[in-house]
Image (cartoon, rainbow, N blue to C red; front, side, top):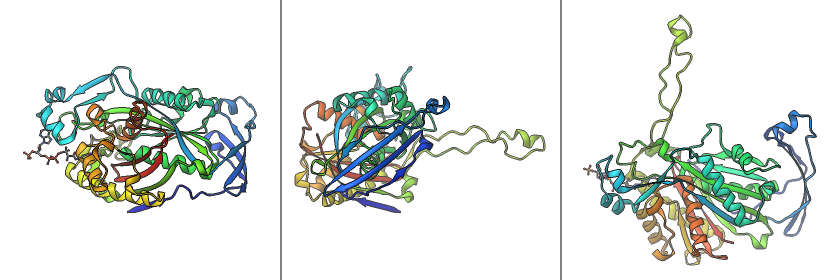
Length: 404
Ligand code: COA
């Protein structure tokens, strides 16, 4: 078991030169610390593959920036597929009912990718909305974190999103794979890059299409999941504006047996073997199994670990649960939301829930629910939001943040 807890206000100073050229990025920085403020001169150079290939200069100066040691959330956005599948629709393909699903989970509908829709397309739509709200141009982004376990490209979708958004400076872009904790871990990763790396504008995307890995004949799992994308823009700020107040993150590989979608045993084509070559070579094409889940164990894990994690984050933030304006959990099951709220003594009208409409959208669920709550006027500037992700791995974690 590996545990890591952190207080966002702790930050690492760095001086000298960093070279990220293997990512298509060169970045050199100089920091001089003046009391609570860091002056960071980023002479950053950002070149895409084509720039290098054409013999263009490998570095262009970037404007000097004055950065603090805090970070804040300045925009959010979301996108969902067109196709809606209701509980009654599912009752036509497996032995279930609207009543069973809604009583046990709170879910009534979910959205599923169809036709020409792609997960990358949803992520781009959510990102554009978040950038618009934040009034940040794609060219101003320093980092894109695509949190997903179901990318359109096995090697990661982050760079594709960078391209489609038209980021001329080619910000560093990569994927984070941590299932339903993905967005929470992306958020804390963004904070770390801002504090320790001098990054200023970070786009954190949570997007998943678990419908691709659902066994649509298994009534125990197919009722739960849906597809979606959400995004936030996290921005560097001075310490006195810091809005990511504390976090707490964990993983426990021993619990993987309760929730997974592992690679299937390959049926080796054995072409060479049949010709007296190496047995089992070349290997057959690999694929993943459908989602395997022990629902009761996952339920128990969530209601035990999530309140503990939020309490740890509150301590790090120097707050108590009475300071929480909104409890925004990964939207897995209404009964999990209710149980965690009861443990933390948070009234039900302070719990954000939209899973009736979308089901469990994995890494997308937190930014999707946040976006709806912000645009719907529920979450307002200055509100304290306690958020937590949990799921396969097992992984889980929480963060206390102030919106706006
Ligand atoms: N419709 C009707 N009956 C169903 C059903 C469905 N969709 N799914 C399961 N059942 C049946 C079972 O076969 C079982 O029947 P039996 O008693 O005749 O054997 C019965 O309902 C109870 O099954 P059980 O698995 O004990 O139900 P449950 O109360 O634990 O609810 C979950 C199942 C999946 C809704 C619940 O365990 C859960 O939500 N767990 C957390 C899962 C989760 O959030 N995963 C993602 C985390 S990121």
